[in-house]
Length: 125
Image (cartoon, rainbow, N blue to C red; front, side, top):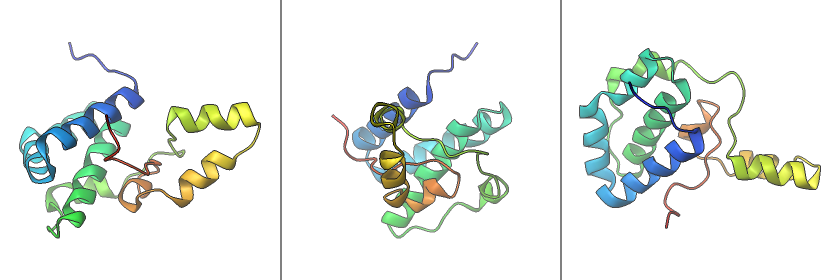
């Protein structure tokens, strides 16, 4: 049985894969793995949409065409914006929406189209 980790852990793992593999190898690996469709069919929508956004973003960054296989999924988005846990916690502590507002302004378009607020994928240790 496949174990589902928290979304923040999933995002971190994906960003580390991009760093370790490089953009092109990550794109190839992800498309060949079928994980985008696999997660989507399991109703793990945040994971599926995050992977698709990552592939689309890296494709744009490397002047590659987007994979047509996922046009049906590109029509979907999460019902509510999905923010990083740190952003949510910062707003709770400051009793404001300052961090969410700033995150939305700085979000990468490929992620934001799915209602996933992601501003930086390369800043991993």
